[in-house]
Image 1: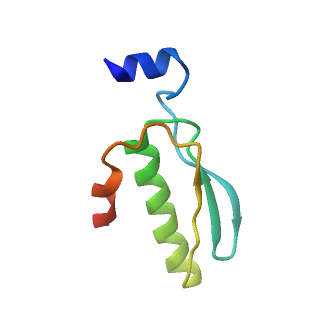
Image 2: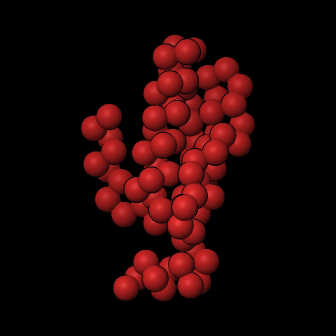
Length: 77
């Protein structure tokens, strides 16, 4: 029920995907567009992993996620 309430209040937006807001060298700022945290957090982490492969290092601030919930499970990547 909370997800429906959050969508009605525009606190979380369905069908959003992580977008690179700033990408320069090892810096990768990712905008979640208030999408579902389970989706956008995983995408942001995957983008950070790819940036590390390219540059050897990455700092990846993550802004405007929707509800992250138990996103700690993503740390297993």
